[in-house]
Length: 257
Image (cartoon, rainbow, N blue to C red; front, top):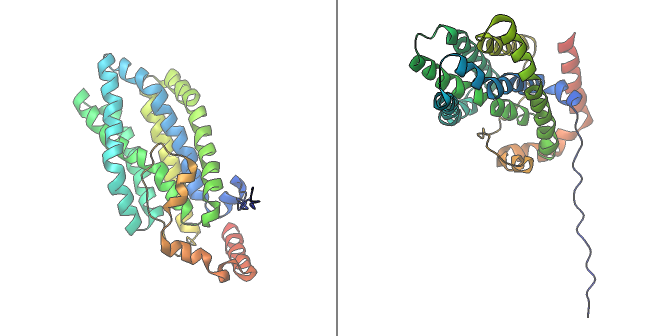
């Protein structure tokens, strides 16, 4: 005897767009895009850069490993620090310090010193994308996490796709040190924009999300990042009142004037 079962109705995921994300989280969107421009250049051009500096094949692997180790070891303390302090301010300092270290790379007196710079730079540069995602999640409803994270991932990928062409062209024009110069310019541009946003707009954040280091995982895993306090905030019906929505629109419109 068969029993008829009613299939559960799956909730619809709200759609988002980069234009909407730019409206209330422009710094996060800019950070993931420019992070792609910088990290794409690192992944694609660092073997050429290290080889031209005199590293052998094993040395090229060592340069990349040192940068990755820096990202693995420094990413978590930087993220935990951003949980307890103003996250946009932390992001600003991270990108400016990464730019400063990139500027110092052409002047490294030895390979050992260059490896040390890449360790610190990797810790800063690899922290930027997860910091930007955490900053975005600070301002997203839980149901919007998957679509929002997918949008910024596309933005990051677009930056990574363009980066090898841009960095390679600069290296052809100015020489091998065009790579750290390019990375420094990208991070300086982002740092300048972060400072501009801090002076123009007050962040509309009532509760900060918990930082999670970025590992290879699916976008759905980002749904698990929210803590109970933030979920309770968005479950409050008053949050969805049209008056509150209109107030946020007015604040954003006034900031753009």
